[in-house]
Length: 376
Ligand SMILES: [Fe+2]
Ligand SMILES: [Fe+2]
Image 1 (cartoon, rainbow, N blue to C red):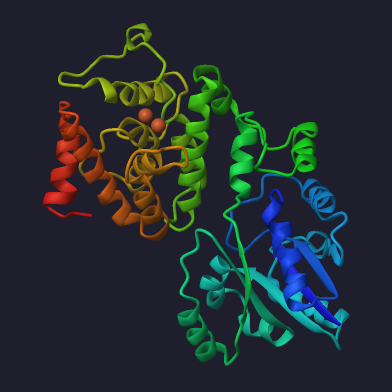
Image 2 (image 1 turned 45 degrees about the horizontal axis):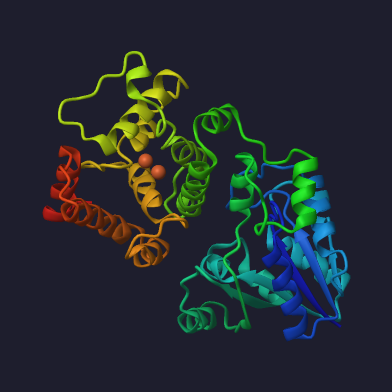
């Protein structure tokens, strides 16, 4: 028998997880495919929703998918879930069968640093699924793989679309519709069970912004969070900065007690400075890095923190932006974050010059620091 094993956090499961399984069954000629949700992943953030909810959603999503079943092995076992333990367990259950361990292209890039990768490979053939948004050179990876493990992997012909569980969680937290993001039944389960609820900051932002701006905020959050682990940034700080960056977009600064317009401050940056003021004084956010990321998200400045740079770029490249040249910046953001920051700064300067706008001093400082003096 040919058996596929497909692991993940599935927080929550989305359409593309199901498509990957259906295509793996077809391409590999599998007799059985076992979906294994993680209890606690070794490299990822703590999972926000309960194991029962993630399992229930998987059962709903895979109901009717021929040959697929869901296993609660890692969840029942508890503790950090290591793939080699899972694979050895299934190998002991099916000693005479051929196992295929299915992972995403992004996971292939870090496979060498997993716990006991060679023990995984002695149980199963590694099977990789590419998807939009991953920039992997699979031939190079294949060479590395052969050298490191003396094995080859299978690359599925099927290429997954860029679906994201993060987007579902962010939209749910802002009470935005999940149409087109999650399967109808999963969206209903999330709603009925009140999953992925926001916190007091989310509620505040919802009370301050019209729905159109909420979509922008949501997409800035999705973009920023997609880079948090690669840039080794605290995901909660990334979430809060992105969530609050435009919190004062619709507030008249004259109505906010204690807020002062600084000399030379141009109109487009007022909401950013006001947002930082609101975050600090009304929402009592006591973290200067978050406050600065909000404050300089429009203008930039010299010597920004990595978090500040991330919010600056995420604001410019989020999915709903449609100015000329945005696709190039968006692609760069996925591929090379530092370069995307430099190019976004150049784009901002060109935009301001072409519109003959007054350029705010902090933007000039940023340009001087990063472009003229080429500092990091
Ligand atoms: Fe803004
Ligand atoms: Fe924004």
